Length: 88
Image (tube, rainbow, N blue to C red; front, side):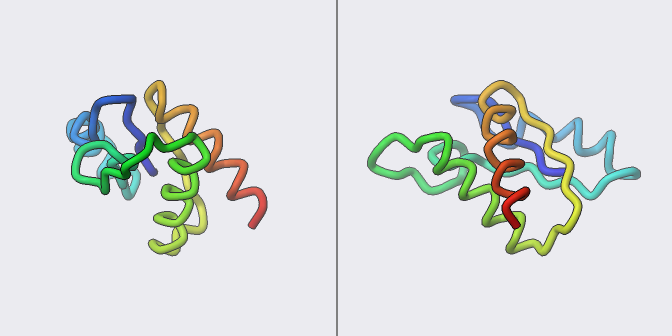
């Protein structure tokens, strides 16, 4: 399961959720571009930029079946990622 946080937050909002789901899912919570410990670009990222970064992370981890949990902005980004995954 890939967990995506809301605007102006970071992956740390999912710590307790990850602990609760650890017995059922392999969980990954990532900081979206410009948030938390991620790179902070000079210009504001677009939804497509966030989606491309998450998609790249999923590919880098060789995840073949992915559930995406998104909170607000993370939900929008998750929808973008799902559209990219369908193109595989």
